[in-house]
Length: 473
Image: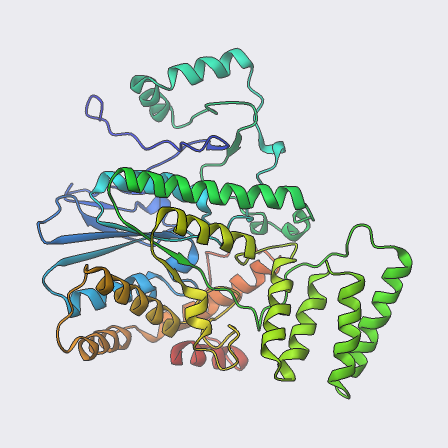
């Protein structure tokens, strides 16, 4: 604080900076609580917590993307709410406060400044569920601002002065702090799919993809380092992905595929399609041949996985679905290399890792995660969110953070039922409309204004059946 003014934490990422970094939480009108202001609620759900922390309080900040927020629902049915309900019901010895910091389309580099900010709010624990949104925004060199070297060096030097950073805050903007290689991002998310023809912006770029994977790992480790320096424990969570019921969003042929190989590939795919209703083994043979000719075309792997699945060969089906996800030109689901970075960070920093994908997949009938506990390509159903909350509470109990009452299961279930029954029917209808718009957005059919301004309509036919499934799950 300087002269009565409090300014925001600035991102310390050396490769990505922002036009401005605004605080996620601000004091409310009465000054007794921090809250997410309306200007940030386009991406975040309303959330607040007391300024003064009581002696019994245990404050948990949960950072992540739309999975944390609870899309296509709201935070009212996110695992953060179910976790808080369970903690309060089963261990009233503490004043539990689970703060939902889930931002729509927020990637690791946008969440890192939020973690830095939250360190000032006396956190007792961080939960980080990050990984689906790393490829959404354009972070190419085209976004780099050209700044003269002398000006840049002056900025680097003066950035060490608190008065200079205060001046930046007052002006509402900042400039890159290190080099011309720093990518300057807009203050808020500008996802490529938020615009018409956004899918065309996704192109094959192996080097760029690897750089994003490495940057994700660096961001995770930076966040873990800052939490450790402040003696705040962290639990990592690997997000879930729909493998069985989500085709790749964009497929492209291998760049060096010869015309002859392309022709042979097309013939095998055509013959496979002809065999779908007559002979699955022959369809599999043709698709296997097609993936050998061109292993880069994601859709072929997905169709092969579907055939394996219909034959009951679930291990090979799952492997094919993972290939389809990882070769998607538009990766809206966490990729295997990102999962590896997450596991490595958990191991290196010796922090717990809850694998939400494996947790939900173990409940799936075929052992492959699909629409059984997910409502779209990544977002869990309400039942799925409850399972994630239960896993977190179990981890709390294992660590000695949570001291459950004797009848904790029935107490938890009663708290869950009371909360769920208190949700108005329109809540689920809104969620279905949001899901429909999110589906169009994910397939590159962006509508303007943004998908967040969903209209309220009463679904009929197939849409109504989907609502019933969402409520049931």
